[in-house]
Length: 452
Image (cartoon, rainbow, N blue to C red; front, top):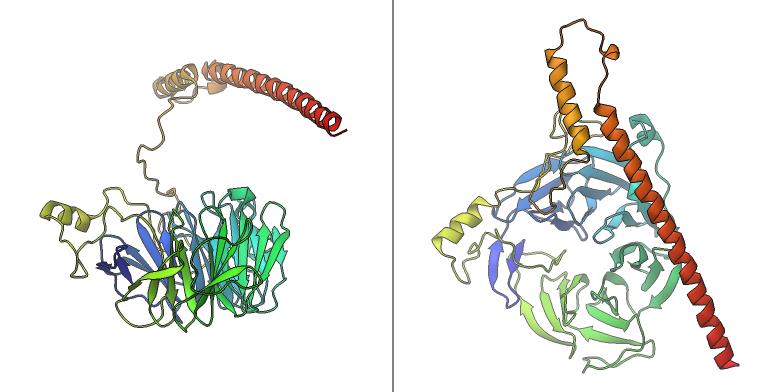
């Protein structure tokens, strides 16, 4: 695993990683996680160390790995079709269930919120799981093991194994794109669960990606070609390396081996592709020409490409190239962040305590990103403090029910105040709905009169 600059300079090298396709991702802001090919283990790295920070052993080899954007949850898909979900802070295996009849090939959480988990498998099925149902705290451990969750959506339009899944921007209103060896890409609506569009290409598709605005779709094929098609209209502009086909896509030709991973820059001007022959190519999407080929350290196929800002605690200078940082910055990068994101050893089996004791909670890092809002009720808090002090001063054996307390008074007043605010908000919402209805009727009537 290597870290390179946009100009191809080797910045860092991390050891001991042989991840399968779709088996490597970023874990929060401080870590990387990768499943090991053919082995029942997960490896974790931190940015400031070039060796494995932590290892976790799993029941079976993980074919696919995904993590939520905040790094709180990690999902893994096994060769048996089972999906596993761990809590990063505690390391507990929260749930595992048979999601597919064959191996899981791709996993992805929705961006930002992470409320949905999408999974694809060799059984040609793509399922969408609501994380709220999967991690339902009201279920007992026995119910979680015996009653698998029901998918929110289940799509079976592909005829060959699913190879890649990508979720666009927009959270609940986002689109999901699935690719398969059947040479097709399906575009779905996550809000309605319906098929919006189906695209067919002249070769099997191994990787997909959209630009940040979901305006264009890039599909990496098994013969080394990359197909670009528009999601909002006709394909326009650019001096493409290939001729435009009648189906409405451009062809980018670089290597002759399968394109295993794709990534786009935030401005959508560049596309980065990784192939089975170990080459990484940077494309200029305005001209659709390759502008740079990055030489990969080591041997083997490129299985993942991540584009991000340079981490603050990157172990700079490991590759022996580029600028050497000054001594103070170099020492700081070696130490790493002062408050790293909690990462506990992952449990192998369901029901194990993980990295925390039964009486402990999940570690939380308070970084000051959320302002302190104070106590909910000052009077209630003072009353609780006074009550606690009185309890310590009272003699033993005294009946507490006979003594009045001011604690409920403050809470009841706060509750009454909140109810009044809720009623006011409901009345305001009803007024706005009424105004919206009147405005809509007026606009419709005006348009009808104008057209008539």
